[in-house]
Amino acid sequence: MGIILGMTGAVGVITISSKANMAQGDAWGDLFVLVNAVSYGSYLVLVKPLMAEYKALTVVKWVFTFGFLGILPFGIQEVLTTQ
Image 1 (cartoon, one colour):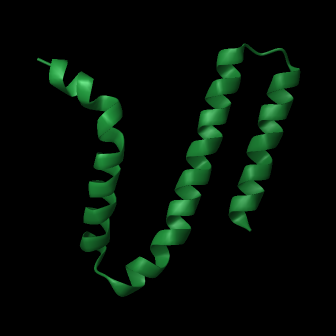
Image 2 (cartoon, helix red, strand yellow; image 1 turned 180 degrees about the vertical axis):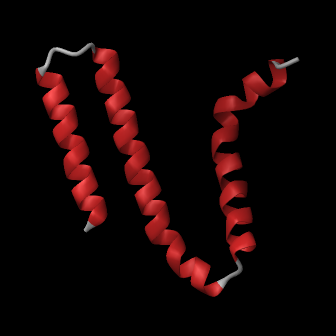
């Protein structure tokens, strides 16, 4: 219920800000914030059963491992060029 309420609020903010003649970059930022909120809410819902079954350190280890693998293709160039 909380996720649905949060999504409704975010969509409302985006709709209102779009009507206020905001720059297109602001609308993209709002969209990314909405995607972030939905992703984090989904993560919280999906991880709850895992936290009941496994130790917290085990769950966090695997979440960070898969997160690292997911973000690596987008950030590898920056990592390789950093002094």
